[in-house]
Amino acid sequence: MPLDKAKSIISEIKSGVIRPIYFLMGEEPYYIDGIAKFIEESVLSEEEKGFNQMVLYGRDVTVEDIVSQAKRYPMMAEKQVVIVKEAQELSRTIENLVSYAENPQPTTVLVVCYKYKTLDKRRKLAKVIGKSGVLFESKKLYENQVPDWIRRVLASRGYTITPKAAQMLVEFLGNDLSKVNNELKKLQLILKPGAQITPHLIEENIGISKDFNNFELQNAIGNKDIQKAFTIIQYFAQNPKNHPLVMTIALLYSFFSKVLKYHALSNKGEAAKVLGVSPYFIKDYEMASQHYPMKKASAVIASIREIDMKSKGVGAANLSQGDLLKELLVKIFY
Image 1 (cartoon, helix red, strand yellow):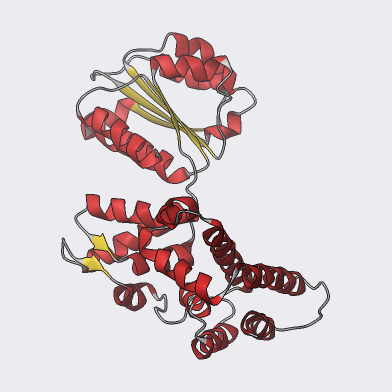
Image 2 (image 1 turned 90 degrees about the vertical axis):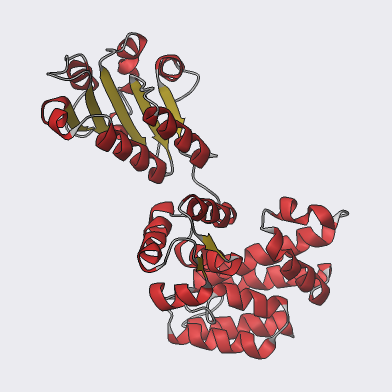
């Protein structure tokens, strides 16, 4: 997992083991920014940074400029740090870094931030960096992996969070780890160490309703709580900007797809692993499977697809979000 690898890299630097090259790449910028920032703040003292720390930007330099800077010797310090941000702008010529990577300057710490792209690991640069430095790939987490990430990050800071509270954050913020982390930091400012983050705290301090959100709608539908489900979609219809239909449709499609998978499991004890959800939420799928047999669950998925098409103007004109949600619930319940 990227979190474990990132922790390992930072721990190694703290222990005094500093590599000549850190090539940080991948779809998730959170870890790339985090590692680069740690190196930027901790490798050199404040007095050393003036002459020995340089930040370059991929759109403004060439690979040859980077190599030239990296080959300089530090002034009145043991090392210099060269950080290249937005290095993905150099993707067409990045392989030109091979010759330097084969024989890097031992007194230079070169940090390359190559966001949203990855090196071809079959080519020479990736192989050489893997031997002389650190080649780190920051992979995007799936949304069902984010609640566990939240739990682990908070545990490392001395906090806990309820499963529902974690799910509320994911439902509202998705898998953008930077946004999630920013909200967690806001909560930490008002909480004492050791405190538990609850849905009530999130509602009060982040503005996510603990009663009117997609997670609660999913639960109401799964439990066949018709009144609650219609109450929630009425709230959604009055607040369409905060509750876009596309998000609701995506979540319900994912939920009923997992209900179908749950039906097909011969060993229900493996449900959490197969469905990719926390064991805490398996009871929701067990309950939904009782209310929606396999044939009905398949029909619900077909209805969700139909409403999705209508929301895009296919087969329906000028229907509001509220009307489409009501039509979907009627199809699901009746």
